[in-house]
Image 1 (spheres, helix red, strand yellow):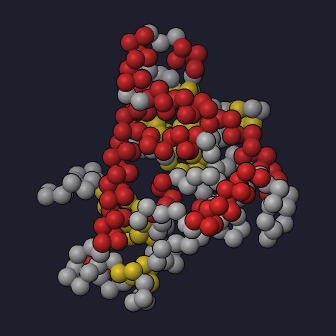
Image 2 (cartoon, one colour):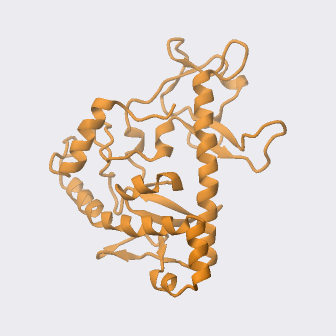
Length: 267
């Protein structure tokens, strides 16, 4: 076991077990942020603030769902996702991936597939999706999950390189306040005055490595901070069992459209 009910998917543990696709985003109700990758920056910047934080592998970008204590405004009490875009890493629940420091021989898969057994979506019901075929290989559906994480891992590595370039130019600084809102002390933003003072070769390096796009997405996305803060304040003063029709007309319209399309998923 790794943590929070996560277990590596293996024949020994899951050969005779089954899984279900999620039908509610209730699992994301308490998430204050999630990591993002460069291929989804435009969609993320149009829906959420993007901020940076130090992690064990360096400074990384995150979509921020919450600026104060309390539930996030992007998941309804019925488990509907209320934003116009679902970050890619949230579409694969109950699965996740754990990076491998040493890739096993004869494989190009640099991660270990994990499943959250505390999700309620891992079952012993033969009517659900099997993990493995009768000959012990991953089912086509789980192969699709692995393909998703393969693509996500590649994009995450590219995003990491962009952040490393920005960090080497010393462009990150603490983002303690924005639009009069006090932020958590671990958040980082871009020092735009320092970026403007960079030499032309350094600016070209940012542009040629797509790091400039990440910086601009962060800059534009900060306009969402005021809305997120106000939405959370409204939630704190309403009945915990009530929907919030006044929360935001645009988000509610998008939520209705998404309900017609069904839950987003990449597998």
